[in-house]
Image: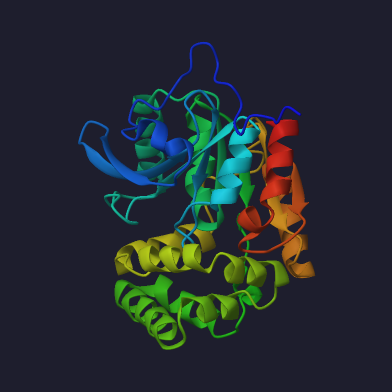
Length: 312
């Protein structure tokens, strides 16, 4: 009996990431590396999984999980012809901090240009979405975009659970001192209960999110280690740019962007109504992943890959 190959055969003239320094090791390992890009040589930390020549799927992470999808997702994606690429956005991990979301999109454009990557599928998650909107609109190397758990322009403070989260986030937006206190509060809570229990508490309204946290607790711990080490200015910017109204999101602004907005199915009716209304306003198709809420992009990995195979 002939067994299928674990990965698809590369194209006759595979197009690899010109910034990659790992070679074949990235076919089986999730390893982070750093490149310096742009005219000022800004450090960008990234992880790439899969053989050269696979179509890149670029993840822009959210504040709560600055880490890669699971190893199993990366293997499944490679078998489907996709190479998983994750950039730690500016201010996270070994990536240098830059300015606002415009500057972040410009930096990632430099990365894709210098890497020589084409036909990129973008998956922007949570607070990574404001960067993703701009990147998709301005970088021709991005040919399909997925925005998961995106806020758009609406008030979602009432959606956060536990209820003590919203006042802490509101304090962080007010001024830099408030951001320092808010970040300290999160660090103290995670230090007291441990990363897994801390995230379980944050994910209490979604059984799928809780399952993801428990199953991939090592990845969660790594994500928390990176996320909790950010500067309070980065923390404040993440909240401001994702929860305040975004001037980029004018009516119909995404009508020429090939892509879709997704939410996890395990969410509230008020979130659904607001999400659908905003998706219609900015003119992008929308849908729901079968499991999860804030971690839906990762918990519903097979469904995400199915969508990419069919639509991207």
